[in-house]
Image (cartoon, rainbow, N blue to C red; front, side):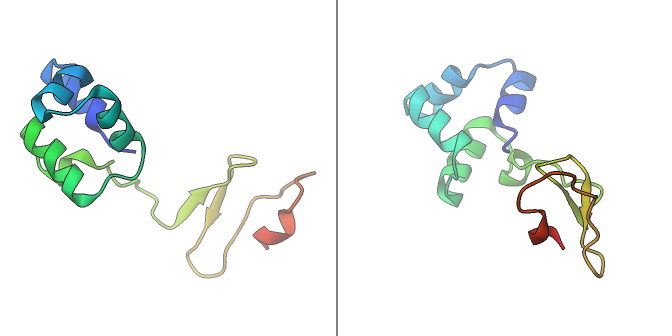
Length: 97
């Protein structure tokens, strides 16, 4: 997720203000921010906010060797052999092994 809304809040502007700065509609900006923006669009947003593209990206998570299971919220670790939480009554749990 991009940090555009967070940066706007820090700068005391709204997403509508940012859209005006960029010369686009709010809907176009929202679609870019909530979708998969191109590097060019990220550059435009960064310039309008006077930040770097890197500043727009989420901070890296401390634990980069795992993800959170969407079914149970447990950690799935990838340091070596995948280690998964015990999935009770979850259809498709065989794919986690």
